[in-house]
Image 1 (cartoon, each protein chain N blue to C red):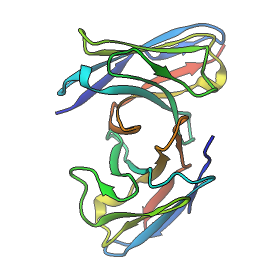
Image 2: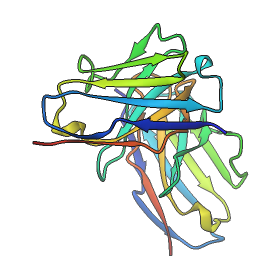
Image 3: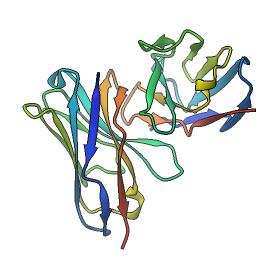
Image 4: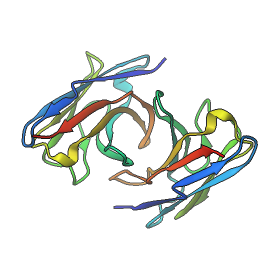
Length: 117
Length: 107
């Protein structure tokens, strides 16, 4: 069974940093692109970042480019999201997602991030 | 960026009925449209991709159609477990973008 488990969420002040982790199991991690998708309270889904299976290429929307960094450790079956210069609009539940052909075919339960002073 | 407009935002129906949800893209995305189901306490589920291809495990009462800019998710003979929130997502180009969601409730 495919499982994606996010950790590292919490309350953080504006301008500070936070790093999310996602441990994957039930599939061969290094065969798949991975991504992060978020959902602000009461809002829809927003794609945040993607990374190729080797980690050699990464992709971001303009809303987080230059502030967020996606990375992975294939030896540890772990995906990361480093979030810097956090803003109130980054408050959301962040989902770790497995990506195939730019489609999210498996989702984690999510990690809640609140940016507030 | 490709804007995805989903309608209706809210839909009430009874078990056994059929419903359709629309998703319109601001420009052509060929057939690269996915549908997801969101339910409380469960992880999001991919239902359909490439417009009409059912993901493994998706019941056959779900179907997707469309190409270019106009797409439809149809659920025939609603089951109690189908009442959920549905999102569309274009997977034609980055940035990947989602519709705003349709909440399907029991009438």
